[in-house]
Image (cartoon, rainbow, N blue to C red; front, side, top):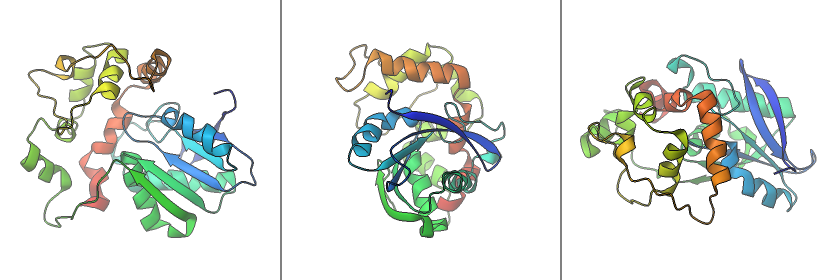
Length: 241
């Protein structure tokens, strides 16, 4: 990863860590990660697509990795995160981007397109399905009715609760669970079992190494999980409810 440059950009009241590669004159692809990912999840795409003539940019979003994590959950709405990205593009002198999002990054990318379509050339989103919105019900309430209180998004609603669960095991074990789970069912974390009770597969797939796992663990041991979990707060869903 020695070809990838790392910098800090001041935007929208926070300091944002940005990984980038490519010439300033190249068309720009902006990559947005989800939970519990970081810029690091795009490392292979950054290298490959920059070799094809693109400038590739992948920030740690607000609350993650080496980017600032405001303490209040009220500072993690899509308006805040989209504002971060607008400021990022302005600071880089970039007018329009190809936008790629995964998981929460896909929802943020969709919101960016709604608020600032003038800054987007094209959009590619992954791992978040579009579904009809019920204007009478918050998405989290709908998930709770369909999937129960143990559904992970519902478990993430109580401040500090899931952090205490995560604290019962080593962070490297948490990320092995995150990245090696192959259960196609909706992810549920029963309180009586906890995250520590889920299967821990020590055999990593070919695309994931111990070095990768330790990178994530090191960043989360330093920053904690709360910033990323704040994206699941009820106020964050204002654009989708």
